Image (cartoon, rainbow over all chains, first blue to last red; front, side, top):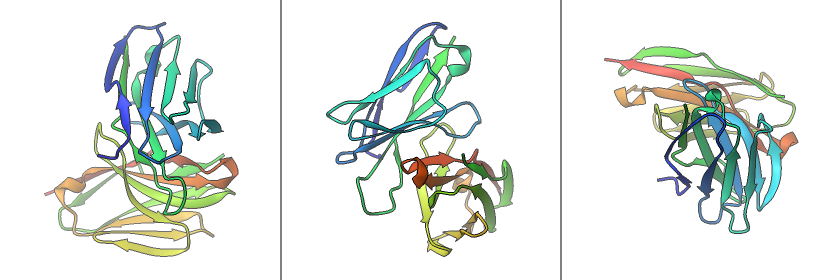
Length: 114
Length: 111
């Protein structure tokens, strides 16, 4: 158990709909990262937050948005869903400082768009 | 941007040694990471290199050459449970230390 919690674990919805994925980082971690992993593909970096502020942006579509709240949990909002958005969405957190700064991943939210 | 390249698939025999290579291009290098990911599961951290040289951790070792933009992950005494994808990732200080991943190398260990 990495200590990172993601909900829901599975989600099935229809095209055009909107969903929200939630992530709680490890206790004490200030950084949250979101990644998308389509079938048999690598991890695509979407966005990074640090202590409530957006720090880095990757290949995140305009239909997607995210935020990190004062209690450090984060939400990824996906709207106007398309079939191609079906994927595993991972959240990861990273320690504040010291150590190697490796990422600790949640179990992922598997989104299926029908 | 970053280009991170690694072979798509590799096959090796139980008990053998396998080396998985990774090349990268970034001007803001701030560390290279290897992760293991079993199908449908979360990636888990294996190793970290920020200085040139070899880091050894049990059956797994990782090497880095910053001048060549090159790393490898060495797995010794392969076990069936080592069948997984191995992801190379680079941290980029130019982009607030975000971490970008290669597409991963799917390793199959055969008896």
